[in-house]
Image (cartoon, rainbow, N blue to C red; front, side, top):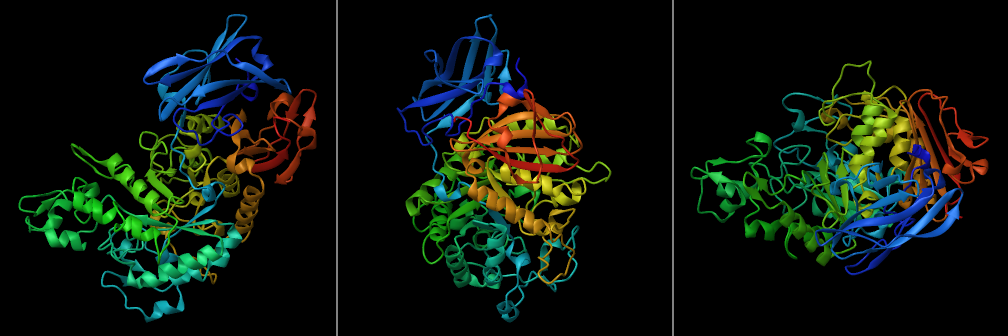
Length: 614
């Protein structure tokens, strides 16, 4: 079997799939590149699913030869809305191989690991190549208007420089008074970081600072400035070229929500059907066994109308004037509508997408899964996903500091300090089978407002390497406010420490420049936004991959520890002699038929190269 750098390659990018938005009945031109080191080929075929049966294509035809690679082209019929496929390669010497979304194999593979393509690409063009920045309003910035507002009854008021309680009771009642006008006042900071998408955590009235336990959906929380403040923030953000995404919890409400209180102990109330009540509406099912978070019953037609279905729903109202949000993030996306025998998940999420399409089709729907999203998301409803499985966890585990004895609950149990090759394998397994249009809009998060900070758990100095990967992997970099300042935190509550605008806390002044520079690279090099991803090298301490488009290639090398043996074939990439370093100032060496780089400890390098097809 060929070495990693010369293995056959295909993915769903435009370099290999000509039509990125196919329709039912289309016949797509599909390409695969195969290096001649595999031996002389007898045939190359596509095996695809067609109405539940396996079908082989006619033999693919050689298209062009470049740098030791033969490019083959064939046709893939979009005979169903969702199609999975893999390649069969047979040499004249009798060897055969299968290429699927997880890599090259000598034995036949299960359908679950096939490449996937479908007719569901509804991601707005403005999201491709974007940089998303997540803000928790209470902890981001406090405007002068905040002083005039009454502190909510649930809250324990804090000053901006107060220490944040990070564990135990009372953590969610800490109130620092950040508001929507405060975010508006800091839009220049977002522009400096390179942000194109602002994602707000929940802004509806609630009984906590995180507002995942809404008490109403009829208005924006007055302590954040109310409806007018949200409308103003979105308008000013749009003027600055920044889209704004809202956050809606469709899994549960607070037990003080107006719908719940209307039905508690009142079986005849209309809202009684909104929840899973029993025993005369005195008992009810809750999310994660918390009695304060009663779970929605999506079997109710009325709750569907109020929240997700039609022009009067909360989903639709957020996308229209006066707010004009550019999309929604849906928390606990895999849990929505699921309770014992009930499973309304797909119905509900499809309704959300239909309502968004009717209100404004040029909007982004983000599904937050935390763990693996593959069984839920194929792009027919969610146009972007946040899944820790594909990027967050492998990045944390590769760069984990084994000298500290800490655990992060969202990252979970298991092996720490995995090898670079295990990093590669994990990412391939979690991302490869995702349709390309969804993979391009996967949110690559180092952390969120529900996790500790990556920096706190990683090898000292590793954040620069991790951010480099965040901005060069397929997907959308997901930056949580404060990452760009190099803040530390052991828990999700600690991550909610207010932004230190006036040096209230220690920061890393060099980190913001790293984010700003990498944002500019993504903006000016479309291969990082849309290009294919091909692995070239992986060892215990280093990884190397290339992002390729029709106009350019971008080579990325990252290392955890020193790797003096990092090399790959000269044929693996084109034009290495003239490689232009974009980040890190490293030099590639071309020695005979090899390209070599002496990777230093905690190193990240990015180079621009010519196109692979020229």
